[in-house]
Image 1 (cartoon, rainbow, N blue to C red):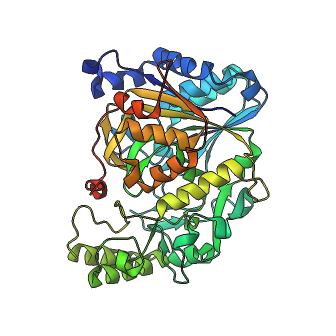
Image 2: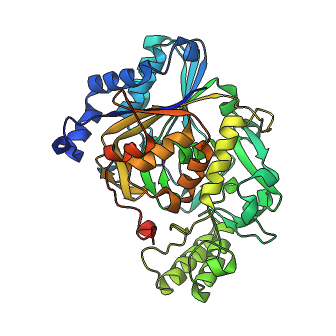
Length: 440
């Protein structure tokens, strides 16, 4: 299979490469359809989609909280609808649109009645059944201090154990160090320890013929950047299975923060106690105490309780594991030697996210969309577009290693270019606070 990335720029001139100008594209449905059609027509045909089932995986991280979220937080609704209609034109058998947002996301505020109505209208127009699904098994409401678990039975998921082949194995110990914010560390320890690395993947991934992902290019607190690779973490339905960092300082074998601190160690103990009791009075009390102890340690902006900094050496490993499963995993929970399914990536980079991503990004006027069949190659190109140093970002470095022996083609506005030319079409962006000095 030929590997490719095709990029289309959307600004007539550098002077018009502005947030205000590019934001107008999201409101121009006719222009969006034209952009999507032009992007997909070369690389997607009837043989890929006709009479096949299609899983659409957008970036649905959480609902919008501020006005700019509409353009830079998640996959834009109008772009998603344009891609959906283009796919429906190929007459697939059925379509599923699904993701697993953060635990506290209010689903009905993100997936609005207006959006669902437009999806239903398209379903009727083309005569294709479309389902919208929340992959999460657990949701929470911090304002009410409630946690709802087992929203889907485990039978709706396939459990994979990558064991010693996991990217996490080299940093695994007999100690319970793996953590994910707001989840029980003891449950994490049951599925991730030396020799065992399990993931809880939605069964729909294996029931559908084609997966089309629609990432939003953004900075990311823990991974540095999120795009095609990080997006696939949303096929895991239970975040107890997703190590995001290792508790403790670098000197203590963790990657939570740089220097040892007894206050931060104490803070972590209280936060763990709170996460073991989430949804209860004592759980909230421990969590509040843990947060206050963290503040007392006087961390700078780059030192965060959730390991949102360039020293995080865990999250990229989890991301690489998930992509291995997405591409090579089968419905029996086995990882095959050959790729098991077709994957198409359509990057929403009309306006990207910079600064405190992925949850609180500011807009960046990238002005580009892209299509690819390789998430590793797509992210290497995206990193160049954001003028990032891949040698200092573990996820991008791993992606580069993954494609180093591949033959691939990169095109920008129908012109074939070399990888080192991609940066000429990119922009400088502001990294997340913990990554400001990642080159040092």
